[in-house]
Image (cartoon, rainbow, N blue to C red):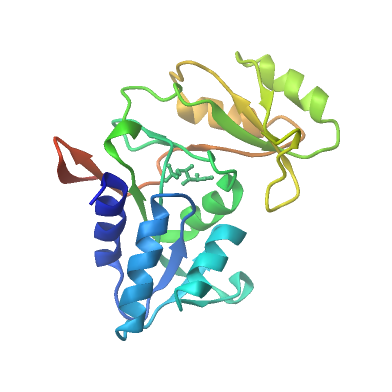
Length: 221
Ligand SMILES: O=C[C@H](O)[C@H](O)[C@H](O)COP(=O)(O)O
């Protein structure tokens, strides 16, 4: 079993009957959703809220009932992957472009569980270029304003066209090299008009499930 499958399936153990579950996006969350599908087919009763169109499709294929977000007052647990995590369980997310919905759902969940293979750990965040979702209007200006914070934003492409998020926006990948104060940078970025959201998830993860020396490890905050 690969590391993504190990952590992804482990997270499914936290899901109990009757829960409303935030379903993450990406190649690690894939294994959680597959496992939850198996459990649902064996009688587990949950409803899911997907963090992307891609995840919605997978969840439906797996037989997981989805609920309309507008009808939801409480999300019990959200499970999602990460592109990078630090020792305080702060994260960089958005490698797959799903960061906005992931942040809304992760923030609304009583418990946000992160699942990440051993390659994602870092002393300080920043080696992974930070994804920032911006509106199309004025995108060059928004990009210049972000650059003033200390990076060279690169417009994410899909082939030779801009990548478009599920929300109809662009993504700028911003290589800050090393992020000393993720909480400050998160706020500074979101203060720039045109920025919709950024991929820094600070003080959100309650539990991290990862791998160390080939073994499953869990850390809580
Ligand atoms: O937008 C994508 C998400 O933030 C993913 O959770 C993140 O990119 C990690 O994905 P993966 O599990 O495929 O490495």
